[in-house]
Amino acid sequence: MHAAQHEDRDPVTRDPVTRDPVTRDPVVGGTRAEGSRSVFEPAEIGRALTRIAHEILERTSGAGDVILLGIPTRGVPLAHRLAGRMEQVEGHPFPAGSLDITMYRDDLRLRPARPLGHTAVPAAGVDGQIVVLVDDVLYSGRTVRAALDALGDIGRPRVVQLAVLVDRGHRELPIRPDYVGKNLPTSQRQVVRVLLTEVDGEDAVLLGEGPGASGGDGMSR
Image 1 (spheres, helix red, strand yellow):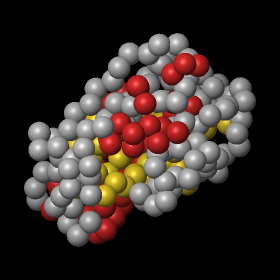
Image 2 (cartoon, rainbow, N blue to C red):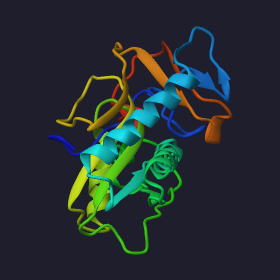
Image 3 (cartoon, one colour):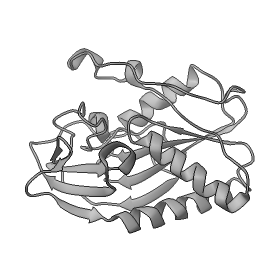
Image 4 (cartoon, rainbow, N blue to C red):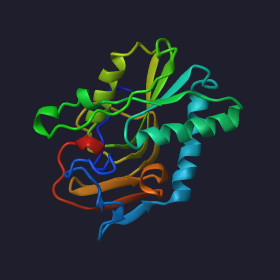
């Protein structure tokens, strides 16, 4: 990942229900909130993921030593989708898992307790591998920073890269993604919500107005 170490999620409701209000998108309870509009349709999301998969393969010379780790919630299905597309191209499976960052967040003392997520990495570990962290939205960068801390506690990858479906700007930390599905200019007051079929029953990226958002990506990243 260029220059930085982590990405905070954007006012994207990362967890189906537990996203921070200030960063959650205008979709509540699985429905599209009034005033939100779609800025990334299912077909566009599919093409973006296919492009990212090809870019990973090109930049890692076939991705023979690549591990995809999604940041819960929606980064996990995105990581598995990317692994599936890479397998279609190369003809062999690619390891994909999840990396829980709950205990590494810098806002734990400021927000209610939340349940731990699930970390799943290949049995061989991440030492010496190219780890691609995958997330739905990049905002302040604080989520990615937490992910880097969590990753450092389970091993020492050779390289760490970052892939995000949406980059909405407003970085608070020096973090830049290696692979981006869509750059989406936003104001601080706007909220971005990523919906994925595996979690929400549909694919979409929604943009709407919300209370002054602080912090950043999904987790207030």
